[in-house]
Image (cartoon, rainbow, N blue to C red; front, side, top):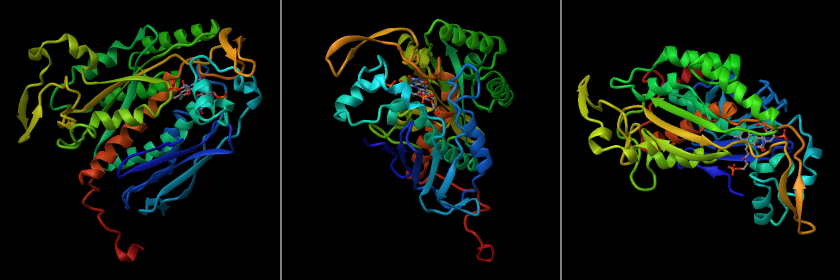
Length: 388
Ligand SMILES: Cc1cc2nc3c(=O)[nH]c(=O)nc-3n(C[C@H](O)[C@H](O)[C@H](O)COP(=O)(O)O)c2cc1C
Ligand SMILES: C=C(O[C@@H]1CC(C(=O)O)=C[C@@H](OP(=O)(O)O)[C@H]1O)C(=O)O
């Protein structure tokens, strides 16, 4: 298994859902970035399981134990390494699954690929639990981006059939000079904290909650869509062909289990427009050239335009559902039925929102570092010898 990504900012994720711990090593973080560990832990808490009734009941504090990479709360240039201990595993839930693969999960493909030596408890290395260290690494990247005035925030556009039209319209109709809609983002954050649903419209969030609870009561699950926006990326970052900003964001985003699709800017709907409708005209603002609208989602030719980067991820419905499903018994090679036991998210979308932000931040920071565009504030290029 190779769970590594990144060119200059290289991330490696390790562990399984029910192993002693899970963690990450992040190489290539520039030295001199102050890291607020309390803020990082709060960011991780947005993803942690067991916090809302609409999520898996598995309770994990997801406390990050930092092993290296920081000195006096500042990145020191050495690889960042951290571990999160798994404290609430219940592997007996997975006894049957080792033999009878769950439809929609990775049990079957992992068994074939790894000759049945894979750890299937809790989904093993394939589990959504591995997004905890991804979120930790991405949380560091977010703090590094904040130093440069870049903000990355995601929200839910729909869960099942429940759509949040408020944020939808506000984001896509955003035009130059692309000011950050601070009030809207605060409302979304408040609804995420209170209702567990990162939507702008409270009624839509309540309906989305109901849709999740309804699916769960029917021993079923629902999917949805997350939109993410990065404000403040300078123009001219990225590369054509294989290392475009789309490629980079997509590569890390598909590291989030259950992601099924990605689109940028107007995305798939662009296929229905005419050039005259979809092209973003250029203008000049504050002596800089800028697209005046943002159907392109901030990327042309794989390179940033200076407008916000906008992308959306389609998340499938949780594969582990409580109703009886058809599978096979791989030991006896006979048809079988499976009733999945255990604790599962009836919808993955709510907890995946910070993970999407983390994945995006890692991709963008890596591109900035590779292109030599990452800049610490002018006030802190070196630590004065007297401070050492
Ligand atoms: C935050 C998060 C939580 C998840 N929770 C569950 C879960 O409780 N039960 C489950 O079957 N799948 C869950 N998944 C999805 C599976 O891990 C995923 O579908 C599986 O590993 C197969 O990978 P694929 O869907 O990318 O093909 C979760 C994913 C994420 C990102
Ligand atoms: C623990 C987390 O989510 C888990 C993701 C997951 C899966 O198959 O992806 C299956 C469940 O694991 P378990 O059966 O051990 O409770 C979820 O609870 C987490 O995200 O931290």
